[in-house]
Length: 143
Image 1 (cartoon, helix red, strand yellow):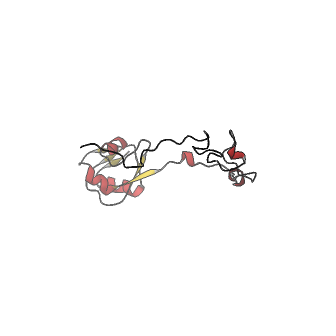
Image 2 (cartoon, rainbow, N blue to C red):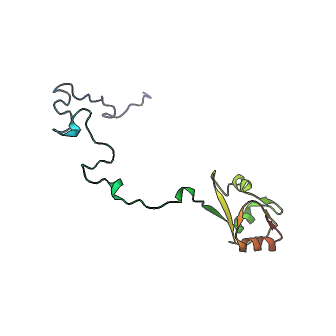
Image 3 (cartoon, one colour):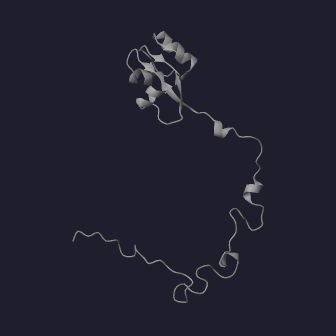
């Protein structure tokens, strides 16, 4: 009592192939003749039987700037208004501490969504022109 057992058929013995007729003998599950039935046989990765492989059929031209792409996380003014007290300084580090922005290599841009009533100082983050005007109208500053 109190013993947990695996259901029947869950634990099976490993099938050892190629050791006589009693244990998957003869072709050992490799089919009949051919390159894949031989020991050491098989084809390299991407080989398509002599047909021009996909990695050579697809054209690769030009330069892709994708690895260097910078994406920005949009933060609205209403989010800043709710998360910060009057007179606080908003930086990337403080946004991460408050859990508004997550990630290691993340960039932030403040957008003019919602209302701002508190006097905030935004430092070291990108701000849209309309958001900067709204922050300065509320008595804050943008550096």
